[in-house]
Amino acid sequence: MLYAPIIVIVVFSFTEAKVLGNWTGFSFKLYASLFQGGVHHSLTSALWNTLIIGLVAALVSMLLGTVAAIGIYNLKTRARNAVQLVNSIPILNPDIITAISLFLLFVSLQISQGYTTVILAHITFCTPYVVLSVYPRLRRMNENLYEAALDLGATPFYALRKVMLPELRPGMISGFILAFTLSIDDFVVTLFTIGNEGLETLSTYIYADARKGGLTPELRPLSAIIFITVLVLLLVINQRAAKKRL
Amino acid sequence: MKKNLWSFAGKRRNWSIPYILFLGFFVLVPLILIVYYAFTNNSGGFTTENFRKFWMQPEAMHTFIYSVGVALITTIICLLVGYPAAFILSRMDSHKSRIIVLLFILPMWVNFLIRTLATVALFDFLGLPLGEGSLYFGMVYNFLPFMIYPIYNILQKTDRNLIEAAQDLGANPRQVFFKTILPLSYPGISSGIMMVFMPVISTFAIAELLTINNIKLFGTTLQENIYNGMWNYGAALSVIMLLLIGLTSLLNSQGSAKAAEEGGLI
Picture 1: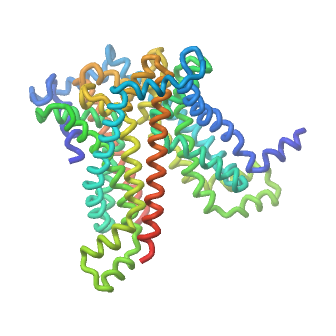
Picture 2: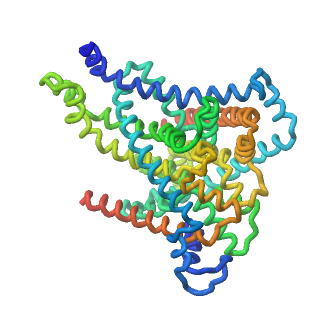
Picture 3: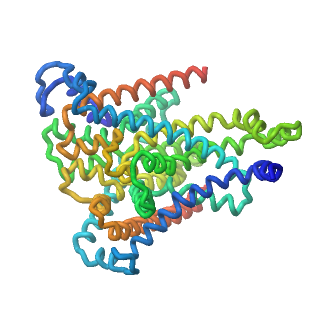
């Protein structure tokens, strides 16, 4: 039942029909037009933007979030609770509110909107999740390892690299993946921080296209590809997880 | 100098300072800005006109109340459909359930907009008209997994011994469910409710695309206002939305606290 809409699209991505419901023969034409230039340049550049923004935002979030988590872990109780509270605000807030708030911020400071603002916005709503992802691993880690390293003469940064990070790595990785996913899937925040220069991500591109007239035929192969990619990814992940359990 | 810098960086709690600054600047300040804009007019003077505008315009109030209604109905549908689904899932053996959970999560990874457009396509395909029906379908379709997951999680973690104890004490299956399992799953239910109700109030994309902009929800009004430069009014609307959400989370946490008291001691 959950899959009905997606299946319909996938099936109809293989025909040229304008209207869904008319099967005018099997064809790959829509797929071909997807990859050619022309009108769809904006699609490929949108895709590119989405990936770049996602990677940069996820990377920065991961670094910022990890350092933050370590810092927060070592704060005194009251400060820690306060920071954790503020940290959870972007998570609990509906995305429209986050989007509008950041929009007002950038507008008030008269920062022209574009790549930078989008990336900053994404970092803002991704980092809390990274913190949430790394923090539990901090709690499970043996504190004395770090102190021991310091006592043995390591500088703080060396101790960090060789002692803490390996422990935290699973949390960092899942934080990174989470941040990346959130970023590429995001729509509302990107919409509000993207400005008028013509910058587009996948989500805004689809939105703009859909406003014109619903699901254009070109979007169908795109959706089908995304769906299949996700399916493959999840199967792969599941396989690896299953293997580990063995 | 260098020694001081080194020892400053050595204290791990100071590592949190960059992030605190970041949070302050990118989270707190923008929120304050929303409130600021909500209470000012175009030239920056203090005014409550934006809020008055909201009260005065029957259209705005109407949209608001309608959106809350939609959110409530969606949440209820998700509960009615989701709880049994989560329950069945939790009863399966772990091998099968993992696969099914995967199948549930899979659509969520596809871009939100594409999912919504897919629903439009489905309705087109079946020849059904877009409108209120498709709106509810789209909402439930998008948010059902958010309801199922917390309930599933909590049901999984329920101590089986409690259920066995109830059975040993002579309860029939119906009593076991209503007196034992259900109360224990309240935390999951309340998370599920929060994770559905809040987003439904604030999404506009679903409403816009699934009803060809025929039906307006509160989120749509918000978005339109900001888009068209009516920032002050939009900010006021955001404040109202925030208040609504704050209210629901308060009610929710009170409710679940009470339930935890009553249902936890068996």
